[in-house]
Length: 313
Ligand SMILES: Nc1ncnc2c1ncn2[C@@H]1O[C@H](COP(=O)(O)OP(=O)(O)OP(=O)(O)O)[C@@H](O)[C@H]1O
View 1 (tube, rainbow, N blue to C red):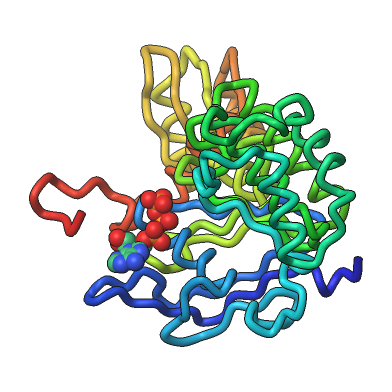
View 2 (cartoon, rainbow, N blue to C red):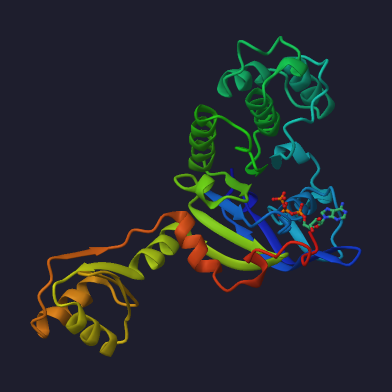
C-alpha cells in the first residue's frame, strides 16, 4: 500500500451539539506503521471525531481526510478504511460468518477473505453460530474482522478493549501491533491511558474537544520519568539546599529520603558529588503511562473532577 493512502488528517475540526462543543478546533495526523492512541476522558469528543472521519457525522467546520480524501469521496470505502465502533452492531439472529459474507457481498468485495479473516481473529470455530450467542469478546473480534474485510490501509477502533477479559485484551493489543507493523495507520481510542500501555506508539490526547497533546509515547514516558528522582541520604538538609540551589524542586518523603523533580539523576549525582554530600541511593523514577498522563494533564481544567451538581455531565 502507498504510504500516503495510510493517513488520517484532521484539520481545525469543529462539531457542536446544541450548546456542547463536542469537537472544538481539533487538528492531528495519524501516520502509517504506528498504533496511535486517541485518549481523553468520557465525553472528550473521541467518538464524535471518529464518526466524522467515517462520514457518519458532518462537521460544522474543518476537515477529516483519509488518504487525502473525505470519506464521501472514497469510491470503495471499505478498501480505504475499516472501523469497529460498536461491538453490538450485528443482528443477533445472524451467524457471524453470514454477517461477513453479507458485508463482503454488499460492498463488492471477494467472499474468499471471510474464512481467512474468521481464522485470523480467532472465530473460525464460531463462525456458524448466531451472533446473539456471542460473548462481548467474540463480538469485538467479529467487528474487527468486518473492519479488515476490504484489507484497508487505515483502521479506526473505538474503545476496542472495553469489557474484555485479560486474554482478550492481550489478543487485541498484539493484533493491533501486527496491523501497524504491516504499514497500516491504526487509530485506537480509549479513556484509560493504562489500556494503551504496550500498544500505542503515539498518543493524541484530547479534552473537551481540544488537543491536549500529540506526542510519541516514548517521549512522554521519558519526560515524565526524568522529572523525578528518588534519593536516599543521611544528609537530607544539605542535599535539599544543594539541589534547590540548582533549580530542582525537592520534597522530603522520609527521614532519609527525598524526591527530586526538575533534574535528571545524573545531574543530581554530579551536584551532590561536587558538594561532597553523601547519599546511599539514587534512582530515576520510571513513570507508568498513567502517571505520565496525569502529569501531562495536571492543571487542565477539562480533566479535573467536577464536583457533583456543578458540571454539565
Ligand atoms: N448525537 C449527540 N447529540 C448530542 N450530544 C452529543 C451527541 N454525540 C456526542 N454528544 C456530546 O458531545 C460530547 C463528546 O462526546 P463523544 O461521545 O464524542 O466523547 P468521547 O470522548 O467519545 O466519550 P466516551 O469516552 O464516553 O465515549 C459529549 O458531551 C457528548 O455528550
